[in-house]
Image 1 (cartoon, rainbow, N blue to C red):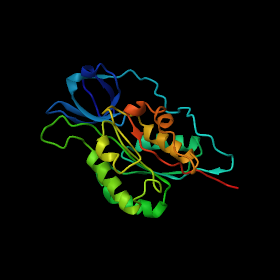
Image 2 (tube, helix red, strand yellow):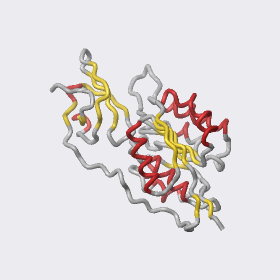
Image 3 (tube, rainbow, N blue to C red):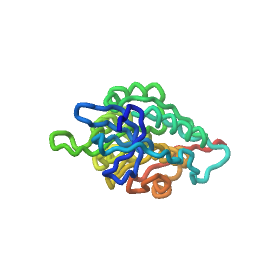
Image 4 (cartoon, one colour):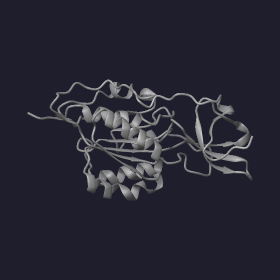
Length: 247
């Protein structure tokens, strides 16, 4: 079959379990570079392993169970840095649905460490989300994780700007990211069980932090249980909310 860039495909070797978009094709090696359609996962595959997907409906408008808060409440402002522009747009729509103030930037993962401090200085957010695509590499000649090092360096730079996890909660990671390294500097990270996470998962957690009162801790399990992989896909440490009541 003649595939082209932009085709939505699945992988026969993985029981056609997830949809991907073809972003590059090497016709000499007969390999396609893939980006998850609903997952924050990068992958490659032999062309003969692919099949065109039958379009399936993906829930990009979940109903979240938010914390209890007063009507006169100011939610925390989110700065969301994303390596996928289409996923960023979906996350921004979700923030808008729940009246969470959010500013989003599309930044390729490799450029995030250099971009983060200027964005923090400019916007001074209450919550920072750093996400995009990631994957565990199968090659013994390369770093084990595709983009975890970029995420880690970005979080480290953000912590130079604001060391306190209470003053700046950070949600970070993509599919199969290096959880053990990321959680040291962040409040929530993926992926403790090395599984895939969905496009909206980091935003869901950020919304839960944004809407939790500042005098309470985020209910970690209640937050992550609303994501695609629950606490196997993303989890975190004790984190204070950032919502403030007007008296």
